[in-house]
Image (tube, rainbow, N blue to C red; front, side, top):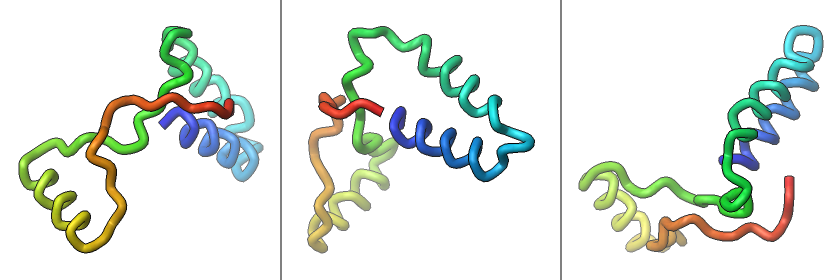
Length: 81
């Protein structure tokens, strides 16, 4: 999510420059600046299913050939934002 929010911040500050040029960057820094340095290299590519129905839906998608991981743990990322 960190990477997605950074990209959203970049897009909004560009597309809505007059109104948001500094707001999105400051908000991103305020939220993600509190994250411990020891976890900043980790991302969670997909949110784990929140209910049994969500789990069953993911299983159905997998059975239809979708490439959906079964490992929802945070994964290291090599590239920086």
